[in-house]
Amino acid sequence: MNNNFFAMMFRMKYINRWGLMRSNIIENLSMHSMETALIAHALAEIGNNYFDKNYNSEKIAIKALFHDAPEILTGDLATPVKNHSQAMRDAYKIVENAALDRFIELVPEKMRDSYAELFELTHDEKLLIKAADKLCAYIKCIEETQSGNKEFSSAMESLRKALDTMQLDELKYFIDNFLDGFYLPLDTLRSIDQ
Image (tube, rainbow, N blue to C red; front, side, top):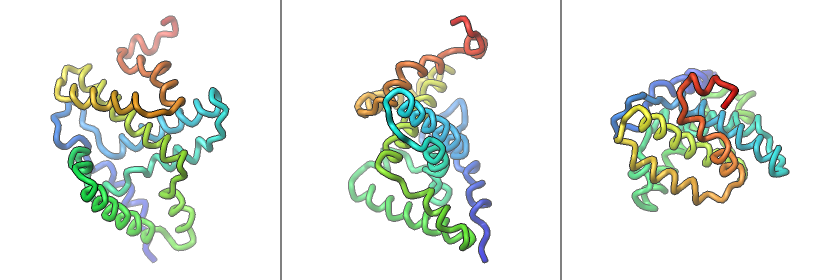
């Protein structure tokens, strides 16, 4: 019996993101996955509370934790490389699916179905997790540019355009109501008299 799934997932912390760019703040896959889960959950709750949606926000958050798990085996392939052509996207999808199959083989058989389900996304789950993923990348750009790193300026502009083209009420609400806080220093964040 192979019980190495959890040990494999804990290897997320060894995969650094943004490999083509100089970062002031190193971000690993584990950090990114947690932040994406937090934002995906928030988007689902925004949808439920402000737009009469019926999302399972807890399930979306858990699925978001695993959204980039294949990168444990593939590494963080830069977006321009991944999206270079349809052939490249198709090839990466094959590699990604092979990684997911391998992960499921590492789960004890009695638990396999419930863990396999974490990698199966409905249309709505895909939309929210993709929006959360892009929003987290944008927030990373905010953090880097706020710390004086101009290396992220172009990525920030590109990601903002991508976010603005997403037709998702929950995302727009988050941007309009919560994004400004990411530009603030800690002392201002802690203040309730803003």
